[in-house]
Amino acid sequence: ILIIGIAYAYMEIRQLSYFKAIIEESSFSHAASRCGITQPSLSQQIKKLEEELGEVLLVRSRSGCQPTSAGVILLEHAARILEQVEATERLFEDRAGQSQGTVSIGAIPTMAPYWLPERIAKARLDFPELQIEIVEAQTADLVDQVLNREICFALVSDLDFPVSGIEEEKIGEEAVLLMTSLDSPYSEVKSVVELDLDSVLSLQRGHCLRGQTLRACRAHDYNPKSRIRCESIETMVGLVEVSMGVAFIPSMAAKAYAHRKVQFKQLQGMEFKRNIKIISLTGKVFNSTEKAFLLNLIR
Image 1 (cartoon, helix red, strand yellow):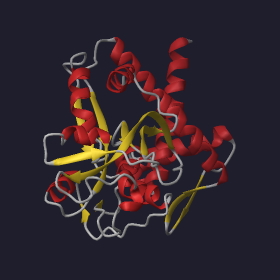
Image 2: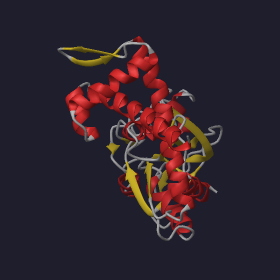
Image 3: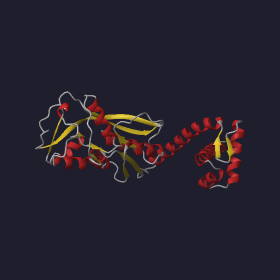
Image 4: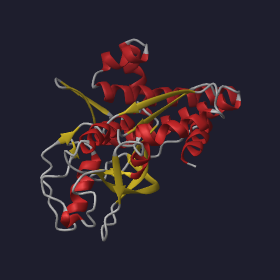
């Protein structure tokens, strides 16, 4: 009886996997190729699934294969079930001592070089066999990669708007400081209103720090024009160093440039901070290795 029950459960899971593949590929033939079975076999399995549920799940048309209203409902539950199955498999792989897997981490460019290296080095001591992949990209790209399951989680600041399928967890915050050259006429400024409109350097569009800087300045009735836009904090530091302007950079980055010919200060009356967040797929079940590694990383 146990063997029959296991076989039946496996059949149901396999059918859900086939069904999900058809919708993702919008094609029976492509899904069959992806699943490694023949198209007639795939069609037969979907027919059995429809008979068991008593509903038509898929409709074929010239534009491809689309789910019916019942199919949409099933897809939502199928995705959760398959995710749980994968999580269970990973859990027992860990119990068997197979923790030499891979953890993929994403991080925005204004955090990756300043926040990750030391923490990864410490966390790696507990996971010497673990393969660690790091993806450095802007927030929008990291969101896409989390949604596509290309990375386990990502380190960001703030999302411009809530994203369906993404969970955010705040793990900290930090001050954002004004950076000036040592001999800049702005080295003695005490408030944002003392800055020239054209003096503030910024990052290119797409970097969340750029938007945060503009919003913080505007909140104090200051609207910088930012004539010079940089692709990295490193470039901004170099330009500030030769008195090409001033810039706002996070305190984690400021520590890395303490040896340069620049200085940092928090302006009076301007509490400029940014959040540090971890984003992951909604409902994602981390295996024990991923969970332990993440806890090591953020502690």
